[in-house]
Length: 222
Image (cartoon, rainbow, N blue to C red):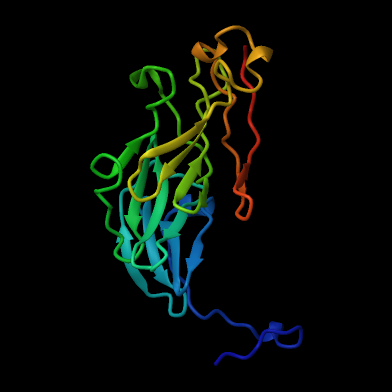
């Protein structure tokens, strides 16, 4: 057993192991640790699972060019038999088995969810939707923001919650209010049909006990 780290022993610390990520993209990435596994971003835009005790590489899921640079989400079922990494890749939401590193093809449509859908716009007209941050997990939901830009003709930056098992869209918070929603009368009539942005591209947090998500929205040019 390693000695306890105290103010007297901290000066005696030595490197136990090192893993060469081999990619400058990992500089921005926030690794996560679950039990004895650490998940990092590394060479060839890959998600990599590393044993935190030994530094041994467990698996690599390569060629994820366009993955969210700021991190990923981890979710596990109550019986711990289903463990997943949830992340955005360009304009899609995807899931990987946290134990094997393989894509979960039962998630969404053949393994991915198109985040350009469900925004009151033609999906093919949307160039960018992926946020910089990975979003947050609440129970069986992954809640994600968006970064469609703040200029004219940008799509709306709604906040959405997807089921982590099926990829189904469970709810949408309209940052540009629809008729009958709070704040609709403070906008021009039918603004939700043509105004864009009001997006949430920064970090969010969840009060797990009360079931409330907190976020900041970036206003658009109207």
